[in-house]
Image (cartoon, rainbow, N blue to C red):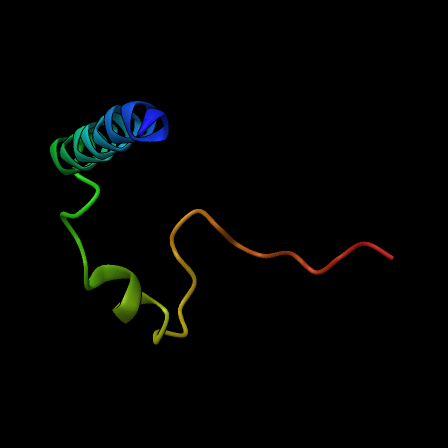
Amino acid sequence: MNQMLLLLPLALALGVIGLLAFFWALRSGQFDDLDGDAMRILTDEEPRGERRHPPDR
């Protein structure tokens, strides 16, 4: 019974922390462009400003 007095509030606190982290990510725009990265990996062109130079030997 003593374990329940510790584990129940701990589980509730971790759940609230996870919920707050989700709402923070939602508000900061983490889920705005879900398809962008999936489509971007299929293109062969390099993004602007990120040219790859051959390694110096």
